[in-house]
Image 1 (cartoon, rainbow, N blue to C red):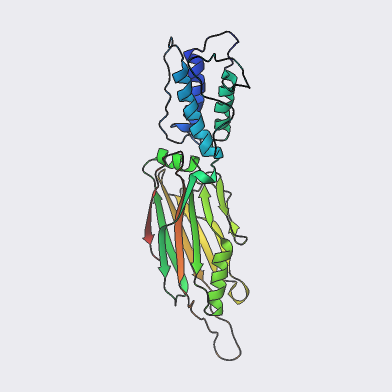
Image 2 (cartoon, helix red, strand yellow; image 1 turned 180 degrees about the vertical axis):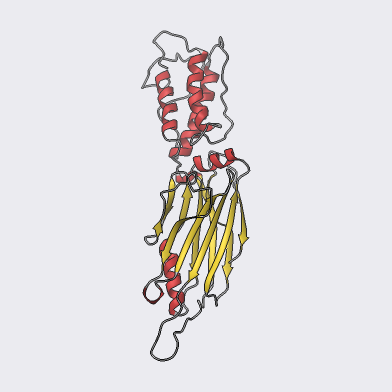
Amino acid sequence: MTIASGSLVLATDYNAIRTTVDNVLGTGSGDSGYGQTLTSSAQSIGTIIDADHINQLFTDIQKAHTHQQGSASSLIAQVTTSDVIEANNGSSYKGWTQFETAANLISTNRLTAASGGMTAAAQKTTETRAAGWNAQINQTVTVTFTSADARRFFFNSGGEIRIQASVASGGNTKSQDWATMCSSSGIIKIAEGGITKTGASGTLYGSYNEGTIPSGSLTKIFDRQGSGNYAENKWEIQAQNTSATVITIKNIFDDIDAGDQTGTGSAVDENVDRALTCDIGELRATGQLTIASPTFAITENI
């Protein structure tokens, strides 16, 4: 809502900008909303909008902007009781147009999160299978949020569920191939913006994000095949939106290789003679925002 030069800033003008800010910083809906308590509040019709009101709005906009960009917005400035709030002033940064622009910008960038305001915890769950394993071993983990809104706030603010695995270095040829499979896959990340991986190897399936992972059953979201004599082996990750508050993740380490003929006698199927470790962690907003971590629980052990 553009204010004409010479007009008073009315409660309706103020509330229009505050609603934009509240949809980002407050509860919002869908992919908008961080679940934070705003400094500003909606004003009733007839309220005289003063410097305190505008500065409260300034504080809320800057909080969201700093979370998104890593620094405060240069589009707006705090006001004093002696300031005249102009319709548009790009020099003082105290014009109403500048506040409207800054509010709209945090709405546009609501799913952006500056790295400096995020904290990674690689091991919300960690589990190791001792050396000497073979065939298929599985691990299932549930990630549980306190509410559907808490889940939205976590992912809208840039949160991620992170999955990675590793096999200890050395060992026999099969172990070395498993180690390469895991390390070259990197970290598999489940986020609002999609499911991605940091490694060069492996295949993502389904073009899902955290909200579109199927709910009916566990669905493959990633796999990585072995190579050479061990091409049959596979690390597969499945996921399911078990409910509005629970994501289930299943790691399948399938040592399908039955051995290879080396000359005479039966094929030899050696064990993986190095330990396998599987970590599931998170990336969570911790700088400007207060975002609750979900609960991670292992329900099936490798």
